[in-house]
Length: 537
Image 1 (cartoon, rainbow, N blue to C red):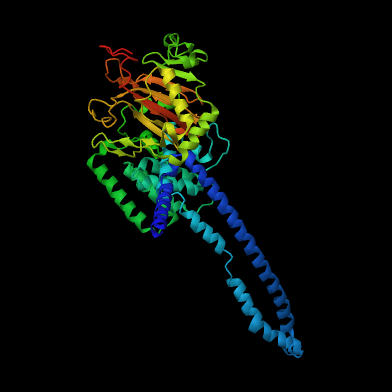
Image 2 (image 1 turned 60 degrees about the vertical axis):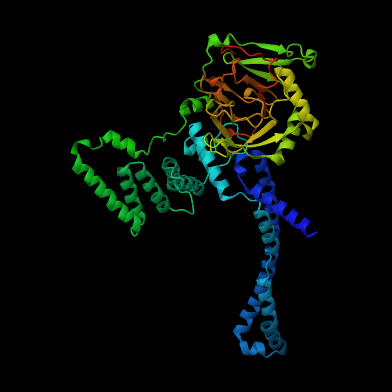
């Protein structure tokens, strides 16, 4: 019996630890936090009602004793001449004031504190808050949003508009600062300063903001502006020790620069641009960053009129597959080479809801395979949660798998399980290949089914803004549409990988993006998609 209790406790603790982790990576799981907060608000209101009743009782008692005190102090001896008054004074001081003390000491918050303590174990962690802040910065960069736009909440397709306070903006800047990201530190501290200059009340002062801002600007190499900001800080707080030493250091640096090269002083035009606080975004590891983010914004799509003439719509029966003869699916060309097609109305709302219901309790942070170690790990370039569904989980899964087999004409028996993914705040998957390259030959060795020959991707939600599937190599952007699916081959008939299929899931700007996908493998397709000697589609 003791073992059973311990096992249950261990499972509970494990589940609690799991629920604390990375809420921001899945909108689906973040919805639980709404109901937890609603319960806490209800509990808080109960506490407030109890406190108000207690304070009302104390006020009534105080008013009554105040009247007696005023009256008795006018003629103390005359007042006490009445024995009842004398008795009641003794009683008040011996008993009633003690009762009042007990009433004041009475803690109405016990129930609320107990509920808060219980709920706190399910609260987001500091990691979640940091991840959420970074997600906003990712959206800021990808969709070229200035901090003021984000702070005001003016985003496309939003129903519940919300804005960031000066303290919220300060928190964003501090998160960037702690991460050594001085570019975003400057942007968000400048926004904080702007809102404070406009008269907004905040916990953090201009001195706090200028302290971070001046140092971040200095780290970006702008000594002139760092000195200007430090002087402004000292104007607010002349006793600020760090600011004073920083100012002396900046002045020495500039004196040294002038002494070394009198001819390389910043021109007035350059100085103005520098003082405006415009700094270049740091370069990163992703070579196609600009092309990828442009496609996410709907820019740079290379769909020419000539190419568009090659695209058609048709009814597709899966090469006369019996399942599709009576009810063929609608097939729409999205791209000509490599060929990408979209299938319309291939998932019903009921099927989508069942898949989401089955996946929700299984969602865990999506992982990627480390190319050096081969170990699955989480990465900042893949921000979502995913779950794998078996056919025996529900008849709907078997039905959907069978439908994908009928539509594609490929064998589903050697395919991977149905993967369901939900993207959270700024959820994304930066450019990647679905197939394994020559430098990672053992990526799918444990499956024993060869490489990923094709990808079938179901869109299970509409997305108000962002969230496109883009192919930076040839400039394609495919937008989510609930109930549709897109399909492409990752390998040529020769078995070589089609490197043009490097693709990405753009960050979700507004909305909750749900997808499910099936990766078909080489084994089992020998007679369904015969091999060829050339690299043709």
